[in-house]
Image (cartoon, rainbow, N blue to C red; front, side):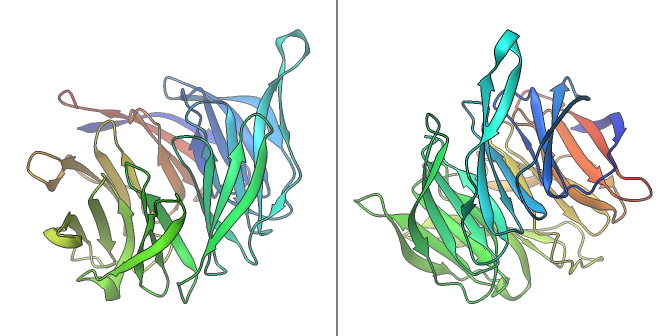
Length: 328
């Protein structure tokens, strides 16, 4: 695989969240406590001068539906908002949001929307995970249940492919596995004892029974479910010479279509492929140097473009095309 810079475009405000709609025609990016919607086409951002206001503090996360132009945002104002595109007069579309939901007692860190578009999961600095019933037709959010075991703030959550298991990872260094019961309610299953638990910097599901963990010491570990327990199958050292203890460097992006894994460590982006046949990770190209100026990044749903938001020396987006050497 190779990468190629295709566009740089300035943005005057800080960005902490990026997300793409279902057909990659829209990119939503936070600008402080507002959301800016960009037209996205063949790796090029076009400013349509659409800015959505409603939050009262910095927006930390955005997640789009994979079926409709409908998305959710979470903020440091402790609320969640849902945003829906509606057809206006003379073919002009507008976005509307219902009243903000006071979701947590502290910042909302991450949001996940399930494949069925009817369940939203949020995690927070307040140490809790909240489950919400959501509806596209009414553009609504309704509280269902709260999951409370973590002792410190929760940094990331991840669903497996079948949407029946959830893992959460927090500053208490715990990776907790949750599972849906026969009544389709979430319940605690167990704590996953990773061998690198004391130094891990992020964990997420890849496939149905596979978990990846990133360490601050430049390693990734591959865990596979065997006999109802996750067993370590691989340790890949990719930059052990340069440890990175930045708590923000826990983001792991996974594209299921291409099996591409993207993560930042120290001053580089690393690209790995999840080899399902051999059940191991492979580094697919040289690292992309970015110094330490990247605040947030994401890849498109089809795995063709990587978008970085960079704060130094100029606030801007950089878009890279990802060129695959063979069919994925």
